[in-house]
Amino acid sequence: MKLEPEKLVQVLREHQRFVDGWTGAKRADLKFLEAPGIKLARAKLGHIILAGANLSGGVLTGADLSYADLFGINFERATLSEANMHNCDMRGAKLRMSDLVGANLAGANLQPGTLMNAGRSERTRADLTGAKLDNSKLDDADLSEADMKYASLIGVSAKGTMLGSVDLTGANLTGACFAGARLKNAVLVKANLEGADFSAALLQGADLRGANLRDTNFAKANMTDAAILAISDAVADDVKSMLKAHARWIQSGGREGTQLNLANRNLESIQLSNGDWSVANFKRSNLKSAKLDGSIFQFADFSGADLTGANLAKCDFRGANLASAKLAGANLDQAVFSPMPIRRPDGTSTGQVHKTNVSGADFTRAIFNKTDFRGINVAEATMDGANTSKAYFDPPA
Image (cartoon, rainbow, N blue to C red; front, top):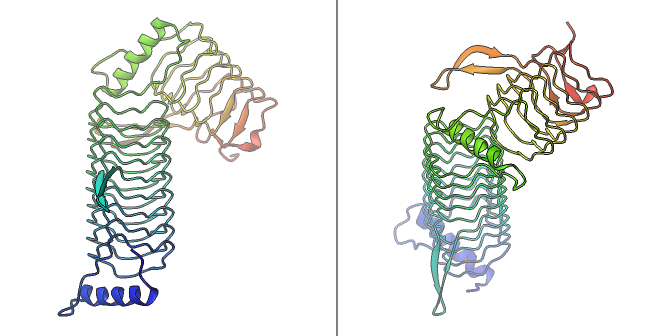
């Protein structure tokens, strides 16, 4: 449906009167409106009917769309930053590459929807591929089956949100809160979950293979049948079994599975990226040229291990023992060696830390870039040929 600009302005003015509570004013019914690129920044559009409308590329910064009927709407590449969209009906909405930074979508319904148009029906999933939702509010919203591949959800609040079978492949959820969210069968492959809170969340059957799990909180989460490891087929079967047992051990808080012990093993060129190998024993193992990037090694034992030429980018070594380990030529881009805070079983801080041990470790010609050694003693480590100007150290006393 196309409207002349003057007519559209008239309809929206009448809707403004409706929102303001004027007697006899009419709620705007703009189903299937064709208005790509429309400018409605900060407009009061609460309760408006825009089902099936095409507002792609529109600018609705700060607009009030609360309780609106946005069933099947096309908001692709639209600017909706700071918009109020709480309790909207957005089933089957298209939000690909849209900007929703700081938007309020609390209670919104983004389930798949079937829209009738010209006698035809089409069931579509809500599409938020590549959308920017940083710091937005999604509490208690329903995004079941939504396509959110490569979306940015940094700092999002999604407490209690329905996200069953959602596709968050490659999405950035850094620092987001999904406490109590329902993510059964969700896909989070290669997603960035650093610092995210999934406490008491349902992650049954979820696929987290290759995800960045640094500082992710899974306390009391249900992770039954969740897939976390992406283990190369080249890994020996007995080692695979041990790795899977360790994953269960981590997920269950030690109630199931077995702590990983790969001491004195030849693991040259092994691929174990983006895994949680906290408290594992790699003492005196051969890990030359291993691909371990993105992995968590908190409190792990690498004493005497050979990690020459290994890819250790973005690894978390807080509290680990690397005494006399060989890391010559290793890639330590954004790796963290700072002390590990000691927490009680309920997650609260004890105020104490466990310092990473790098005494006698060999970092000759290692690749440093934002590598964090703050808070630990590096005096007995060798760093010849490494560009220490690209690493973080405590200032000289």
